Length: 441
Ligand SMILES: [Zn+2]
Image 1: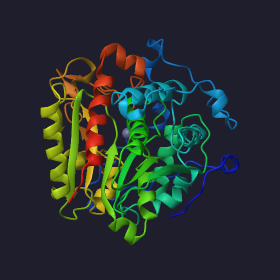
Image 2 (image 1 turned 120 degrees about the vertical axis):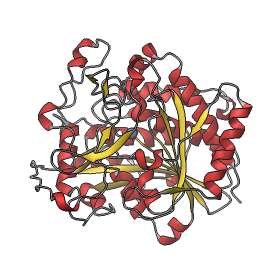
Image 3 (image 1 turned 90 degrees about the vertical axis):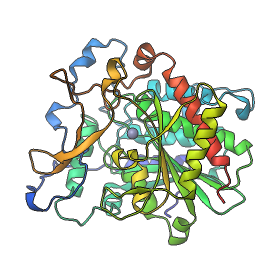
């Protein structure tokens, strides 16, 4: 693993390099040999359509983004940001309470953390400063930087014909960045909490976003991890916990792919399972997707179970019994429907579980779209993900959800679904802690 122990001078060095990016040309697809691959990230949005969201102007609370065009200076966070003060031991706080504060903070101060931009870097710096500020040893924190080429070469799709190229990914990055300057690097932030056992649990959440506040996608996952790390340090963790805050998820799970590629065979063998937290309150149903791949079907590997994933199911059942207000739903097929940072681990045969708060078809209001899709083909002949239920009563619903829209904002969500955020963070907080404290024998 390429390790960079973090210091302020390293950050200043990271700020240095800039990528000179030209708009790439994409090759015409070959219709004859398409394979199942949800290219939801690379082909759906045209640069000229982005980011002019007409709804944006109708929403007065939405923050303006005046400062994006210029490269921000390195910031001393201890002066810039007010500290979140918790005076009682973390394990005595209500699960979710600390996490909700971090979601608010990221929503208001670190919005639009787009992959390969300086804002993404700024968020990585904030994560490191926050962890160090909470007393974690800087020796246990690693910032792992990578270029698009580094990460792309690690994708299992690389080298396959008629699948996205590095140029497609670069185009995607430029589209997501909008007017803002793109830098050469993205980065993962890795925190290790050693345990008695050398078996490891990878707990991951991406911190990059589209050009929106990203409360749900994915400050929710990041905040869950931060709170969990504070609590687990005070508890007796048996397994070694590796918290990874992934960069560049939105442009094609690049951070998680790169992270996995840096592990040795022994390190991969020692991974008990990978837990991914992404979109914790997109809808109000608390889903989890336990599974392990049983066949190597490319991009659609079949979900099976083993003793570890069955243990997740048992823990959920027990917690649902124990807490009147808690309803955790198992949704194994979500593993291959949800394209997120668990995917590279799943494809390597590592048991995974993803946390995702999702819609059900009968939920009302903005959340009437069930978060599911089927695989079809776009006009260009490429396989792509297509939402189910995009038409309702003959009306086209393009962005009926929260994620990847201006609605992914904490005040908007609180206004329309009061209590949803707190409930999700509480439920997932309890579930995560029980999973991390379990002995998997
Ligand atoms: Zn996400």
